[in-house]
Length: 405
Image (cartoon, rainbow, N blue to C red; front, side, top):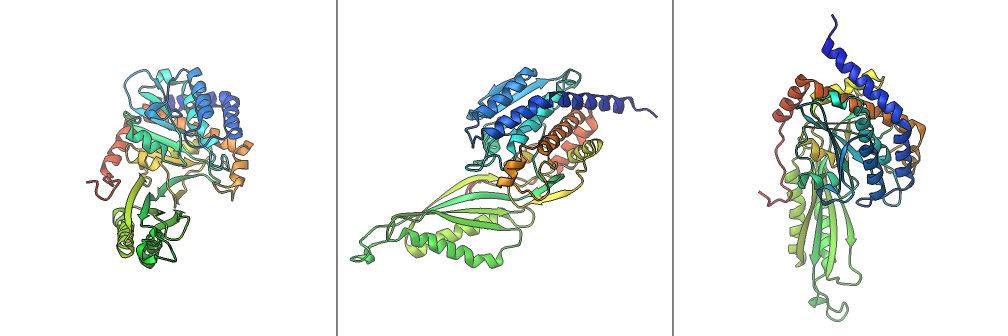
């Protein structure tokens, strides 16, 4: 039996995908320009302007500089009536000294490309299409800054694509935070009066020793890495600094407990070396809270394009999109933009991110995003399932600092 509702949604998707094909040369041209002129975190002036101009020309209301970040933008287009607000995400920052080794010139046009496709059917869709232009994914966590500034208020769903060498859904990634420890001491003449000195570097060394003594007791999912950005310039330095990254998979190891262990290591080091200690907590990024209802719709839409997204992947690193996924139902997927074996943050990824394969796979991702957005805007059953699942899987809050409530 024919299903008029299903057939109507399928027709909307077909028109949106056809519009993406029509706009492919313009989208690829913008991606090439971003690739050719890489801009690092918070300096993405050209990239954000090119993307904003494209969206403005397609009838979106664009606001630049949202959240007090000059290179962040929000673009919206309201449909034919009341409905949810679907967020499509765009990133466009490059890596220092490398360029687009994470393929953000491609990610830039995925969400924007989906939005362009949706212009063909926007007047027939209830609800709102919103594109979030988000700088500084590579650091320091641009989406988290925008979240804290309230820029994502009103979003009901979030969908993002990321370049990779295969197609999959990103099911899991670590929760983590950077912590800086500054030890202070007292200088004295190293040869004449060593008894009068307090060596700040000793505090750093003792911290590393303490952490390393604990490593044999860490669970396999734990990653604790450290470096010394400032070890002093002379004997008995007055200040020395260490920075640690603390990461775990939530549900396997308790992040709060592990963080406290590392902080205790620092405080014990300061006590043992008679140094002062200042602790600074960086931005906290949560692991991915994948919404199954939304993800199933995404996988089904990929199937219609001949792309298999059934594979699930765990990533050992972090992304600021994880924090977004704890605010609204979200999904995160990849298509095979790079040749097999190419990995992110490498010169090979830079080269691969401006090749025909990369553009073809990215435009396919844009179609998947557009089709999924249509489902969310047209299917009350999907909205209800996704929101009920999100509420049932509340993982609670993690305080940014140990003493923050």
